[in-house]
Length: 178
Image 1 (tube, rainbow, N blue to C red):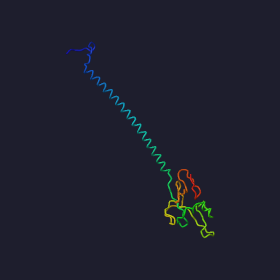
Image 2 (cartoon, one colour):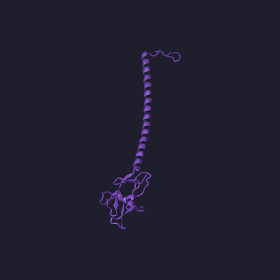
Image 3 (cartoon, rainbow, N blue to C red):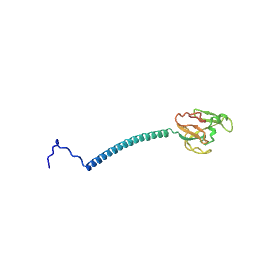
Image 4 (cartoon, one colour):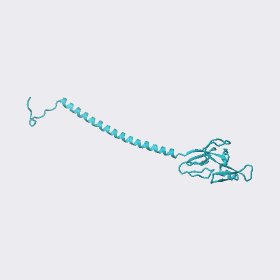
């Protein structure tokens, strides 16, 4: 073998097989770069999608929680006499009371109607909220305090109070509300 001086020696031309191997290696390198760029783009898109999905799920959860909290409770009101016996809903209505010689005490939310026998004797009627029973039965459970943020309906379907934000109570026996 002879000594080759780098300054005076000209490099030989690569063979056809070497040229093809170099071209194939270059094509594979370019393909890997393209695949890596696509994978990085997919990863970035997936990350943005996951972040966006997380925000959307959080927002939906917040709105659902808001509606659960804001949704008024549904309560049934039973008109009862002074003994706790459930009577017709008309007896607790202001208009009915005033048309039959009775009156409504706004401080105690009690409707007073004259006794069927006449005279100065008055019977008391008021709503029981959340109790159970039917006309003629003694009410079971419930309270005489009107619940706030509740939609209150009587047995006959009349709305006593509409619930939700901004609840304002109207007169005792009429459908007040927002």
